[in-house]
Image 1 (tube, rainbow, N blue to C red):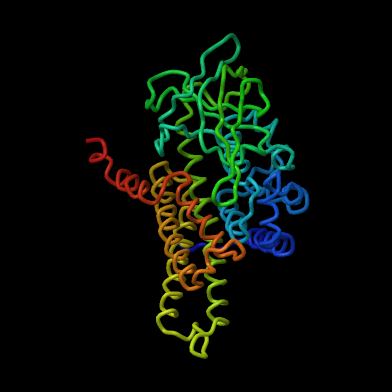
Image 2 (cartoon, helix red, strand yellow):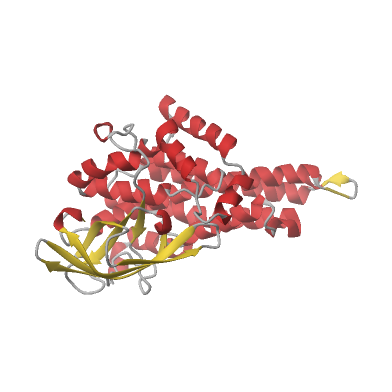
Length: 383
């Protein structure tokens, strides 16, 4: 496959890269992590109003720029290069994607607010006992009049502390691990019965446990047909995996660049350590791991609109390589930097934390190796 950016895509990448270089250096990011808010609303507003990136992947009739998965990839890679905290994945890829693919009515109502930066979303799907199983849903949605009553517990909801809305999965019928009977709901975070237990994550993000206690949700806030949300959940999770792989690529590119710069400056025995052949080989290996991850991510973005099995295989391959490459590049970067590579003051350790967290989001490399094998050999998986 030959992947080439269009003129518009190149402009999107370059515009965002310039803005982040000017406004989102490492010290500004550290200050945001340590602040009470945990993110920079001024940057989020700029993403929406000055740069227009929040609408890059949405259809033009809904106020977007007419892009698709490739635009998510471009944006997420640049966000990864600067360790951006703002909730693009939860709001645009998952929240906006759920509305766009699942509910034309909700999309018409809320996508303009997402594109304009007024609404933010968080993906509330994982549960304490589900691990990476996407159809393991115990949260319940019981019919009540013209709506539902939701109860349950969602864990590790990244971005929930500063979300205006939650995309919540709940079971309207069936047993705990049935693929049928799962529904999705668009719920305002301040709805009575929604409780958040907020906490910081080790990579500088903010997340929360979301507790649902008899939350009243009208029919109009259900995304898609009742009990038929699993196919949409699979699609959105696959798209999010590709976006996360792109973010990891951006973070790895920054770690590699910082490591090369350090190796040119740091001296031992009177010469720069970058002249040592063993370190040159290690940095060449870092580069190769990164390039393989970039290539597989591009393939996955191109396959985003393919048949579900093809899309899922490509997304798995991208996530596997991003996880394995992130570990290799991060470990090598820290090793070459020495002990200072894990200090709070140096950026490389924070990038390593982020790629480690990315590997665990939406399923680790080990999990997706098994999933990839099951997709290749479905008969054996079903046996």
